[in-house]
Image (cartoon, rainbow, N blue to C red; front, side, top):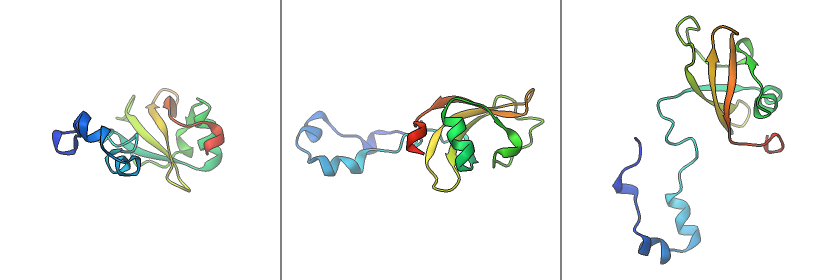
Length: 109
């Protein structure tokens, strides 16, 4: 994975650390998803995706060959601000990006 002991802290380190210093050790939620490709959605589609819905592939910004990518997982972001929305996968049969795990609410978009 992407985590190693170089960035780790002991329990005593954490106990003695100021809250604002801990922020240096907190990674974004999408940090470990290095093997997933990136997909972007415009705001209106991002809200729809965040509700757990599938998005027609023609409305997704991701450069792939759809003939070979069935079930490939994607990190999904809102195009305008780069906000991480969640994980989706390409469904070749329906030619869509299917919502899998959502990390935001509609109100956060």
